[in-house]
Image (cartoon, rainbow, N blue to C red):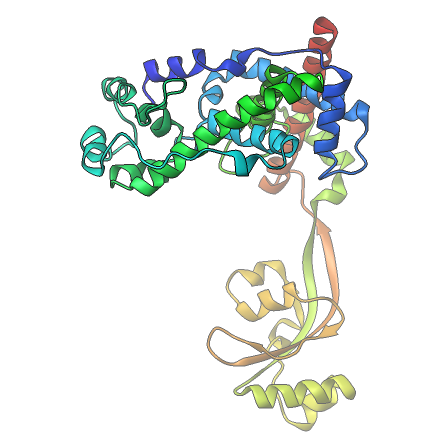
Length: 390
């Protein structure tokens, strides 16, 4: 979103307050939640994760503040994810909550008014700040104690859902409004229960926000991979890896650079699956070479003295197939891209080590060294933060 919207989104987040102390009741509460996925997790491990997440939240405020508003332009905003996480925490406290929810039946806006207010879907998927300010004035429900504006709903949604609203999808709008309204009711009804259990809603809110930001922030520090996201820290550390470090890593991790260099293999092509299957059955029960000789068949790998090297796989499907099959085994008939049927008899596989001066070694070594360094820096930074805060 535009700068003003981005800043407004940050400063209106109630969950920006962090905590470095959780009550024993809060830790036990989160332990029971985490045990749904890890039944062996301990009290100490839960407390450690909660504190680490708060560290990551503090770093997000300093170094990646945009994550407090949204992780991706195409996805839902951060507050949406926080509400969903909190819902999973709070709903079990009130088993009958869904029956108590009050629904919004109609909205204070028509389909024509919705499309008029939103206009055409922007090419970059982002409304102007002026447009957003106007949407804040459009109230969707008639409730003196709680209001929901069109801007509030629109800005929380994914690109796909926003597009639906531009198309005048009133069902989608009503669904999103009710989800927001239901959460406010859940939040209100859970307050006395939380107080009775000595649980702080503000702490749970902070826990939820920190959890949502945990993975993208760990990716930022280079200790966790995130699909379609490159770590700024790993990029920086990778540029500083020296040739001496690469050579040392290679010396100590040579087995990681082992590759399949050669396969001793025989293979026959057949025009039909029936012919290939018949040969396969006979070769399995008697002798491969005897069946070749008895039927005057041609071993297609004999031109390579049946020693297939990796370089040959670049242009030959049958050789690629032999490399991918297990060693010392005869394959069932395999249909080729051209419709013929291949039966392969693999012998031993020979492995080699990539030389130091290859791009494969350089790439893998740099990546591993950078990640190792990133983990060391992260551990030290977390340790210092905990020592200062606790």
